[in-house]
Image (cartoon, rainbow, N blue to C red; front, side, top):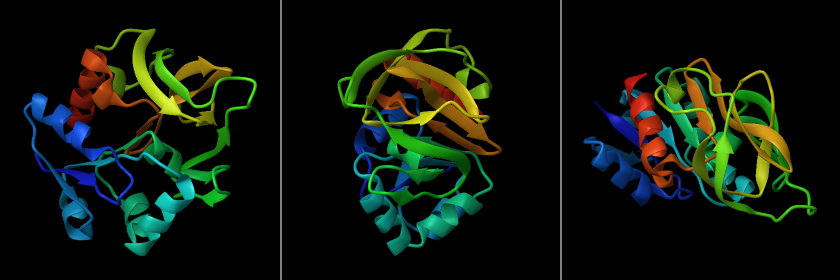
Length: 193
């Protein structure tokens, strides 16, 4: 299986690559449009600031390529947020895959949210063999409100989308590569979609 991890200078790519290796898969880290287009599965990670990440995607035309992909695509953390229409972080226009807006947690809670949080209302193939109220590892200051594409939620300040799905696009706010056995199961599920 050809697995492409999109490299645009805004990802925690090594830990993701190691997690896939533990599952018995090799992934190629690339910014090549041809390699990404021809991959069986594409993973779009992200850590950092939304506007600078979008600038990097635009500089390599990946902002046009990613929404046009037809194979299963998994956005992780900032990757999921960039798949939305808009982010309050840096007043950033996103890729428009998910019709949703990324909002900042209010200062009435500790920001960023760092650590393990329960996920619930799990729907779809991404969550096969993952139990309801499983814990996943999160680090984020911005969140996506619940919407029609939400397939799992978590609560911090209020309930929000911790996973979304639309057509061949999947997004998770948590880091599966840092979420122990449940996170590995999610990666395994994605690779079987």
